[in-house]
Length: 231
Image 1 (cartoon, helix red, strand yellow):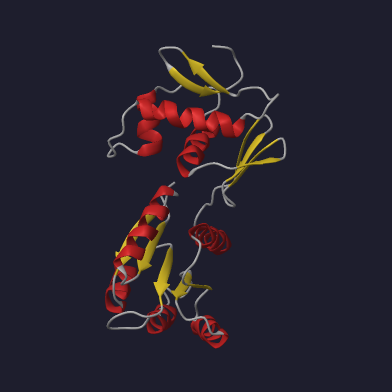
Image 2: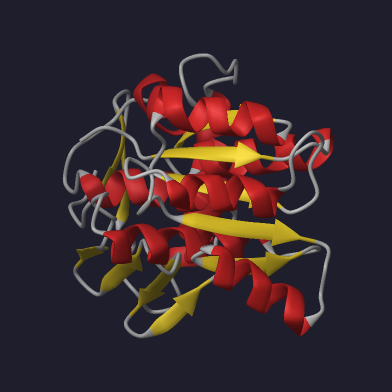
């Protein structure tokens, strides 16, 4: 399944970088535009699955970009989330009336924005959204970004979350440090193999409460696996 493509239309470079980083870490493909005219060009060329659209833009406002997206039959149903510093209720109403599917104000919590993106993509029916992964009494709700074990909420850092997500997608299989680095950190990121051991220890502390079986297995000279067998 191809990665869903999100077009970020934002002229603030730090925010653009932050959004790209977080969206790519969640498995999305990202396109960028820094003004309204470029946004319309990107929409026509790359056919994104969703547009994250800033209200205040050079050359053409986000409101006008949204209006033009809705006028064209090819993009009439394209999901659009308006992002803005404007907080007045009438501005939200205006954005929704002009055709935006959702509206979020700055500053915002990135996890909340990601949840809205997933929900909108799920409702649009154009992209397959992740669901729930489980192993024994461990469950990961990928849409809500929540993990529980025996009903107990687990609090994981971003890397531990991705590491567990990978293990849950391949239960019982043993992966070397190098394989985990490629899958979780990415081939283009230089990280020492021993870094994997540090995050495995953190994951163990988060997943295994006192009295619970250790479900992260260490296989000497081979790597790690999600299962209950003794090494």
